[in-house]
Structures are given as C-alpha cells and as structure tokens.
Image 1 (cartoon, one colour):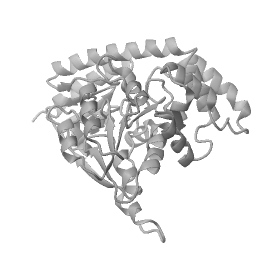
Image 2 (cartoon, helix red, strand yellow):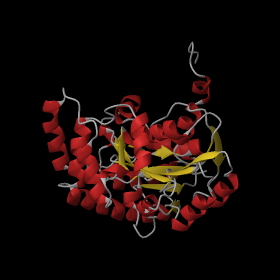
Image 3 (cartoon, rainbow, N blue to C red):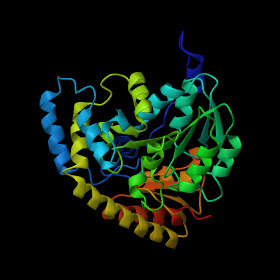
Image 4 (tube, one colour):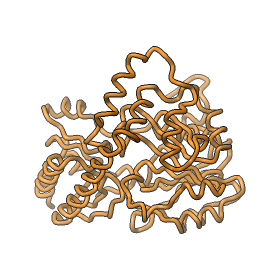
Length: 369
C-alpha cells in the first residue's frame, strides 16, 4: 500500500478482518444452505416492535435525526438510573471506541491492550500515534490483571479491556477493576468494552455505573449489536461522566447515529424488552447445553459469559474450520489470536447448534491423526 500524503501511522495499522459471510461461503463451496456461527450475531433478531418502528422510520429517511439523540439517551439513562448527560452514542461499539481514541490519545501516549482480545483497540490507538503495549492472557484465557499492572506507567493513557473478553468469553471482576484504577496515572483511563456483558451473570461482573458516579477514570462501551440483535443497524453507546461525554460529543462526527437505528434501539429497550430477555434466556441455556456436548467430544471448553463458546479441539483449528465451511457451518478458528487449536462458535438456535455438533463430530473423526 502506497498512498501519497498518507500519515505514517496508516502503514503501521492493519485492516479489520471480519468473519466470512454466508454468501461468500455459498459461492466458494457451491452450497445452498449455510449456518453462520462466526460473528456472534443474535439469531432471534430482529425483534417485532423494533423492526416495525424501523420500517416506519423509513418514511423520514430524507431528514436528519435529532442531533442530540435525546430520546434514546434518556431511555438508556433510565435503564441505568442516570441522566442523559452520562450517555454518548455512535455507529456501533467500533465507532464509539474510535471516537474515544480521538478524545484521549496523543502521539507518544501509551495504551495497554490484551494480545488475545478485540483487535480494533490496537489499530485505532496506532492511528492516533499511540504506543501499543500488549499483554498476554493468563493460562485460564482470562485477562491478566497482574500483567496489566506491571505494564502501567506514567505514560499510560488508556487500558483497553473487553469484559467479557472476545474471543475467550472470560471475565474480570470488581476487585480486578479496583486494582487497575488504583495504579493508573492521573491522566490515565480504563475503557471497558462491555459488548457482551448482558449475557453474563450480573453478580459476577462489576457495576460500572457506580464507578462512573464516583468520578473514577472509567468508561463503559456497549452495543445494540449482540444482546439486542441490531448488528446491521450499527448502534453503540458509551457511559461516562458528563464532562467526558461533552468531550466525546465534541470530537464525534455530527449525526453519528442514523434515525432507523435510533428507532429500533428505543423499542429494544422498551416494548421489546420482554422479547429480548426471552431470547437471551434461550441463548444462555443453549450455551450451557452445547458446552456440555462439546466436552463429550473431547473438546476443552472455557466457561463462557457471553453468546459464544471458546473451546480447544484435539486437532488443528483451521483445518476443522475449513472442514466445517465445506459442510455449510461457519465458525471462527482462533489461530489469528495465537490459539491454533481453538475455535470460537456463536450460540445459535437449537436446530442450528444440533447441526453444528453433528458436523463437529464428523470433522473430528475425519481429522484424527
């Protein structure tokens, strides 16, 4: 890549690589049916009231949405017992994360990123001229708070953490958050990407709102893509102190959420709340069932707190992933994170997961040494 006049940081960053699409797999392997379990999407979406509101909003597509998004911000505020001043919006969690990097990172600032986690943190930091310090997960595939604390220094501006972590599905707890906040420099911030937190037991994950109300240097980034099933609508948000949100809005692009997504988001939080909760309950039950079935196939399953399962297979993960593609099942081999014998699978509907288990069993048999 050679672009006249491009910033040097562009050449150090890597483009985001998404999972394979259903159309790509159908075309590549001449298939008529494909089950997509590689991108952690919600199989029960879209929810009825959300899709109705989004469809109705099409008639106003020629008009900009309200610039302060007050309706959705107030609805989210009520959910967390906060005022709307604590909420900022963006184009998906990715857009929110990128805006946060613009708000805080200056050239030469250091950021800390777990190596085996969501890769976007690393790339958006590089683009802003940040120096990325990577730390490995521990032997239990959990973010190593000990390694993070050892890496924090006076130059640390952001610690990016995914909780639950993607791709491993593990969590860090309140005492871990406390330990990190205690050693951050005065200008440092902890950014928690909680894209999957709604699939976790609320007793096991920290209540970030308490930290934010107490003026701790913490931001929580969330999304409507997973739990609420609006991945294609691209709608995310950040919870932070009002002065931080003011800065966030200042460096955001104007109208950084579209009116169709806004309409769907409001319904997911209100009239579709029961539908969303029912779908989540089904996914969590299926997650536990499939985890047990994978263990019967001699796979080592890491306890998941998300809508996906991370597991070790007794063969090469890429080879098994390719075998499954040919059979019409998309999963996510984890060699890109350094786990050559691991796969991440999205939890789908029961019939989808039954087919996944069947193809997995056949693949493991076919790839025996």
